[in-house]
Length: 261
Image: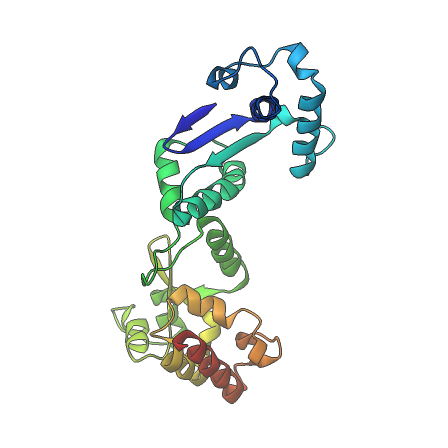
């Protein structure tokens, strides 16, 4: 068992045996190895055969929904002894996401990676105006976005618009400054989703939406809003009904009200 600052980590067999010891003590039975030393050594074959321990092990396996091939020895039990709710919930979030991250990276977590995980999954303190970003799901969503929706760089946009300025970023910068379009960043590069344009020019409906949401959402949040099903549009995506400007603007107004509320 590893323990530090109110945090205890047991393997499944240790925890089952610890419970057995406590049950024996509560029933008045003496256990030769009573005490913390029990949790620091592996169980012998005779102890593993204990009927009480066997019941506990089966109960743990059932509670964990393990498969027939999975034994209690394959489990780990984490006990958190702290009255701080934020600490408990943060630890829960970290632990729940570690398997997926480990599988994706296929490498051991370093101390730096663990520190990064704490920063990513740390729940925001009350009244703090910050946004919690779940790296794994957000990164996948961004990758899917680029796979589905073409985007222009500033140079691409100037070429599509037919503007011959030597400064290829001028067109995109001017439109963005006027609130006609929005951009997203990836890998240090600024991109402009192509659905904002028709025949090389900004679509008016997008500008109306940005007037309502542009200061309330980041570029990526706007990108996901335009490309996600919307309840105010009968489940349709705003990007699919941009020609129905009034409906999309109305949905944006509803969204703005929800944010303000």
